[in-house]
Image 1 (cartoon, chains in turn orange, green):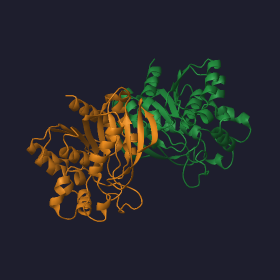
Image 2 (cartoon, helix red, strand yellow; image 1 turned 135 degrees about the vertical axis):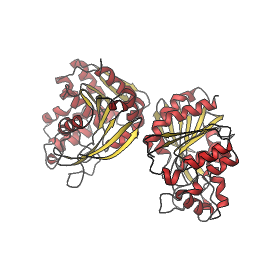
Image 3 (cartoon, helix red, strand yellow; image 1 turned 30 degrees about the vertical axis):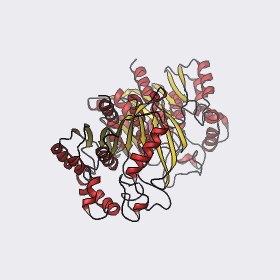
Image 4 (cartoon, rainbow over the protein chains, first blue to last red; image 1 turned 120 degrees about the vertical axis):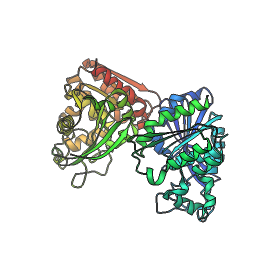
Length: 277
Length: 277
């Protein structure tokens, strides 16, 4: 593990870390933000999962996340969105392969050799982060945007003791039923749709709702809303299952980092209130 | 004038505008942010000048500027940093030509045909903005970063009735005496250094200090501090001239947008306090 960059922001430090990932079989980069409060002892930690094409850099630079984290005393971990580099299978589309790992363990060739973003994050990176940084293990939450919102919802529902709280910006809410999800799941998991359920938030929430109160923000002018995001399907399933959630329709907002940054502080505050309730 | 993009951010709107610039002789893009307060009537306006290589997009996306502007009720105008496009002279270096206009009127070939960023901003864009947006003409200030800090200081000192307030992040403070400035001024203005004085904040402040209280933030870990920025020379000249200023040395901060965004709210608040004093 090597710190390749340290940048001061809002009184704390963005650290860009490079390490050889055993799970993924390639060198990976991620970023951790340590707020000023971390100088005095362990702080709660939020895992931020990014959307298609992104790396750790997008949200750190454009998401106003260091400001919100410093304000509420959170560490932030921002992993990459897939394995990357030479020798890692890729696709010409932006929505499959490098930059589009969908936070799952691929079972199909050629993807199955490297694409295991869910266990990379929940196991390998979790251990590395808690061993290296002053993070309060018992107070961790997860959130993300678009494909990363899908990741946050599914990883939370499957690991509610690890990520006690969850929120999402414009998540892909029912991937088995949208073009992005169908393309990725067919490639990574094969055409047997029964195997997709384990990675579909709208299905998982029906099977195993969590004790958390999930916050979701969705812009009404989001260009991907009707075709790809399908928050209504998740909402119906959550209501039926008794999952506590708040879905806020934000008038006029699109799918961009301007949208994310506008509501970033609200999300971090939501996790704070839930984790310290 | 054509609006090519409208994006909601922090309750207001980022508008990306394209127009044919008479002053520069090419089509140009800039961005304006209108805070929610602009729906009710004219708002004060801050002009943000960016640094080398940047366009309007860098500060809008990475500067936390829409948040600060909405919080304090300011419109923001973010011009490009030079004329651009085919037929516009350029240089292989990032610090001359396109992306490096230095907010001056070039007198030397081949630059003199298009490079007139100072009058583009103070005259043409000023008229366009006040004609098109609900901006309180009597309450305008100017600020910027690095090359844009140089632009903000010099345009303020030469137009104190137009830009009544001024602040800067890590400005190029004495361009006649640093490599970036010497290269650019030699190319744009010729080798007669007497002609450079009109674009050197450290010289201008001695000749014509303003009534404003200028706020400058400078990171102590800025990689360009010792060689390029030279804030000490500006500080000495300001003190001698009786120019009111505050120069804050910010420990551990570098030259990046993380630094800018950390202190963005402070700067917008400073302009607010000065313009409404």
